[in-house]
Length: 127
Image 1 (spheres, rainbow, N blue to C red):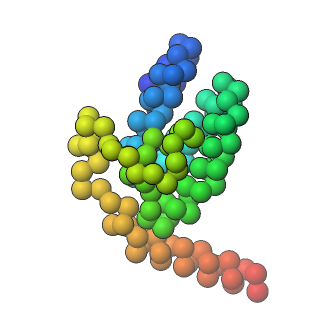
Image 2: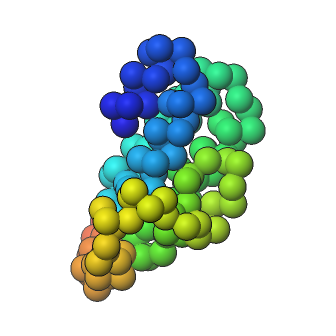
């Protein structure tokens, strides 16, 4: 993320996007980091007046949350609007060691309990 900001500050938007795509690959493991990466991609697209990317990032910001909570993210996906939001992609070799042994399914039970508790709380409030 710092590399993306530095590249953007230097006016190199292509390099900034490249850094954000790599941050997305790594950030998919954690909900907030995943969402923050999409937000930064949206911010960069707005700065570039790239309507297609802006629309794509809005869709991803809306869809990433539920899919992440369900334990499904397309591993290796770079997160930009130029690729399908559901398409798994090869992980660059220099990033593979950072993702070894990671699976969103590991926390699926915890997420299911969290979602059930949130639904129960909402039902109690509505009554």
